[in-house]
Image (cartoon, rainbow, N blue to C red):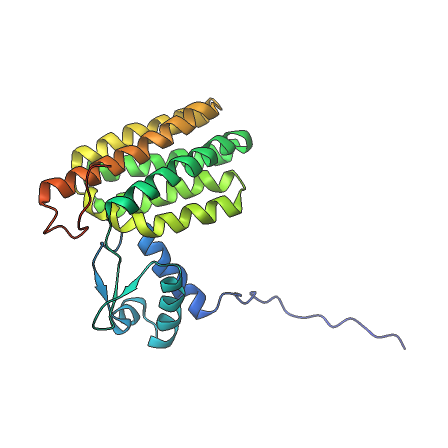
Length: 240
């Protein structure tokens, strides 16, 4: 008698992500997309309540993010989003210019029509958010827009390095985004990025991405000078 195969019912596959992984990813993406501000203090309990989680996975996720220098410990042992300094701003700006420009140029070589459609849709959503000065929506869509472009380049190590810089710059975006004129200037660069991708012009895509990065750094520097360095939440930043 031969063994008959056992027929199993159709079942939904279990997610391989642990709760800790999900919490880590959500907090990380919140940092990169400007949901936190420089100098903002956080508590494990507050984050756990916001995420609908128990404190343990939040604590473990924050430990991982602290190891990535995304948070620092205050004198009272609370976690805080790091302050920005002039040196850090320049270092991050220059690294982003080199790496993100490279990713944009690489993306042109591998871009499909479906990729372009999705990227263009994100750009349209970002324009709508800019027009209505919907800061939260703009910041999230801006993050999704750039991430979608760079994913096309299929350069995982480079993208990982870029995301590490976003962990530090993301909170600063929350400071400059409420400026409507900044949003519209930024959209000019975003539209040029899409136009360059559409005609498969790698040099133009790189140039537009660099312009976007430089505008953000310049807007941040001007904001700090205007608000006063001694009182600024990103203390000490001079024009980059």
